[in-house]
Every structure is written in structure tokens, then in C-alpha cells.
Image (tube, rainbow, N blue to C red; front, side, top):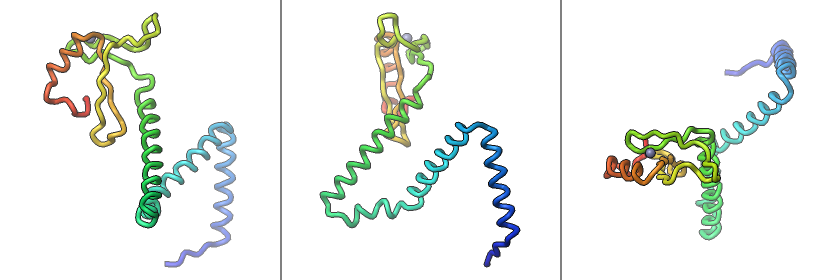
Length: 159
Ligand SMILES: [Zn+2]
């Protein structure tokens, strides 16, 4: 099917664009800029998804040692991304003791500047190994209680 691009359609498109731009201006320049930036990020992400073959090509075509370096670069990016995602996921989250029947609030720091928890357990996410979930404990007693209760179930996703 051939689409016919008429003058009228063009006029309408230009009009819509202008209207959208005005709307965006009205909503504030900052919001508009962040939207543009987000669109750019999304476009790049979609290109990664759509062009997977291109991204994988170097693994077939480069000499082994260079391909290994390329793989290492991608790993570094993935691990940095994992660290960023971890801090975003855990940022501002309320920290509570995971000891059985404890749930003491451990958010924030003690007056001496140290965390309120004394022990932390990290669990890798089942679907995203670079993402981890953390459990916090107020005391050895609570940590031991948790371990005793969940022995054998450890290594899961920590939920
Ligand atoms: Zn506790």
C-alpha cells in the first residue's frame, strides 16, 4: 500500500507540532528539555534492541583478543549499570531489621555516623544477576535467627 502524503497532512503535522511546542513551552522549559533528553535516551535504547545483530557482530568478526576486550568493555558497562540500578532501587528505602519478629527501623545512621544495622546479607536477583537485594539486621541474634529460619532456602532472591 502506498501512502499519499498530501499538502493538507503536512499542514496538519506542522500545526500539531507547533501546538505541542507551545504546550511544552507553557509547561516550562525544564520539563521540555528533560523530555527531549528522555526521547533521545529511549531512541538509543530502542536502537540497541533493534540492532542486536550489529552489537553482536564484533564477536564474530573481530580477532579473538579484540573481541574479548570488547566483551570486557560491555561487562564494565553492565556492572556500572548494575551499581547505578542498585543505588536507585535502594535509595530512600526504609531499612528494617529482617530478624524474625524484629522489624526494627534501621533507616539512616547512628549518631556516631555508622549504619544502624550491624549485619547485611546480599542476594542476587533471580532474573538480573547484577542486581542484588539486601537484608539488614540490628543484631547477631536477629541475623542468626534469620539464617536458622531460612537455612537451605538461602541463595534465593531474598524475598
Ligand atoms: Zn533485629
